[in-house]
Length: 424
Image (cartoon, rainbow, N blue to C red; front, side):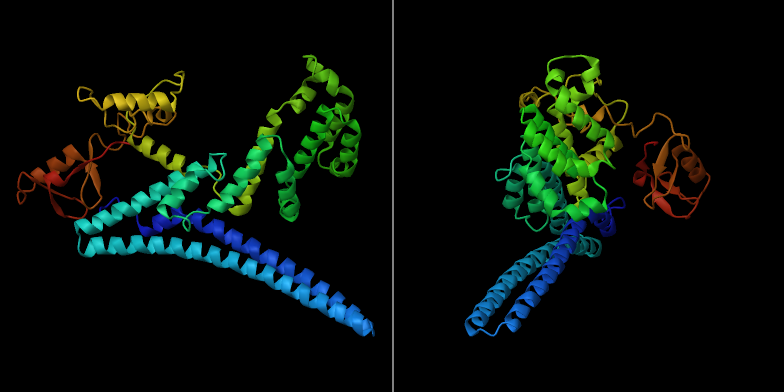
């Protein structure tokens, strides 16, 4: 194991979200079981009261059958909830096993390094990279059954290592919102009303408001007024300005859609289809928060960190004004580089795949260090100015020309073991 290789604890911190998602799902499932128990006990109490209050044998038999049927239905529901919990626990266990696998490989690499162990370590890191790619593809595709992230997960048998089903639900609802269908979103809001109240979310109002706007756009004023009375009127304390705009839409919607008068600008923005994008983003933000899913894509975060750590002022990065290249144009250029006469730049930052991302990122390597002119790192991790370290070692007669001595630890190292460091 090299000095700079991250520890298992480091990977555990990085993958905290992969444990948080199933944990939050277990908590939610447990709360659903509690609610189910409360409703069931209340229903059984009522049935037993009815059973005890009647003296008619036929009626008693009917009530008894109702009790048995009700208990059987309850048993099926509990079995379903138990199955869900067992599945979530198995996911957590699979992720723990993956980290234990890394720990075992690191221990083997320290005790008796071998090419086989190194290959296994490399495969472990490849799996983590594939998981990051699968997570990105899952979140950023509106496809459900043919989602490329889902295909990758199934091909690699990673079903236990990523919560694809939870992400696909958000994709389905988000896609339906962008397609201007709010039925799935309304059903989700009804199922999660207590959580939305707890976090004081604006999602329910905005959803009902959008339904109201669509009825106005369709000219269905009667149903728009009914929706206003049944749903929007309850939000006068929290969304008074929007309520006023909703009232104004009844009068000015038709005129606002036909004129560019700045006095009608606020109504034009309400009638804009871009509100569906806003509603989709608002839903995803709340959904991810509920399930403990990272709002930012980990793949892009790691890529940004990696590119920035390698970026120097010698790198060829496009200017901000450069038009982004399409996937097809990048692919064609890569294929043309496979020609023997074509020279290839091996720098990741300068590569066609990443150079469009790199110009937004800071330089990691500065031209001048404010600590050392030419910093080098010894194998023990200590960093010194190269010239000063060499001058110090030359004055020590016990050392050869190819040796240097650490002034702090007094350890002696070969000159070839010095690692060039870049000022940051």
